[in-house]
Image (cartoon, one colour):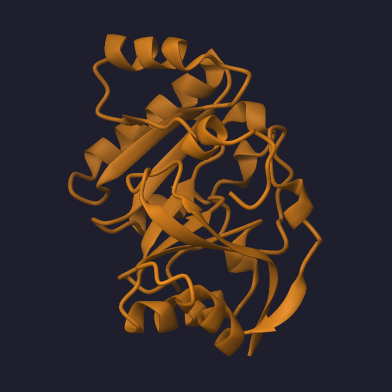
Length: 215
């Protein structure tokens, strides 16, 4: 079995409940969405077929317990759940970053699924699979990338729906679109509404140049 891989690299996890931890990223090729603010357009098509054995070997060489499977949209490739399960069996903590349009139920429950529900300014909010709200488990997370007040109101409704399902999701993260919405403004909205959400800051864009690849 093989997956089309864009890049594998070792960096700092930048935008989840695991932000700040060293992490190996496996970025897979292909995406079914075209978000207005996408910063990984190079992953739409670029990539090579790599066997699962080779992927796992390259990951293991970094000697890092935390692994994130990202994209693109990883769940477009049927072999992705198998890769996740093998990494989990080897003792890794595995994060899956998925764009919110794909059913996450086929993914091992031990995996931390970070579901990125798309807000209106992305241009892809109609693609959200709202059924994923009922498929989340306690370790999973929701991310909403926010560029406008309209996006914030949309994300606040997602947070309300999650709050109604007490115990199903450990973390809801609101992240400002880099260079479009000031983090201070988003922080003030969150505090004013007394929301129980995490403010995400894309640490990798603060540590390195914002458009640098492989971090």
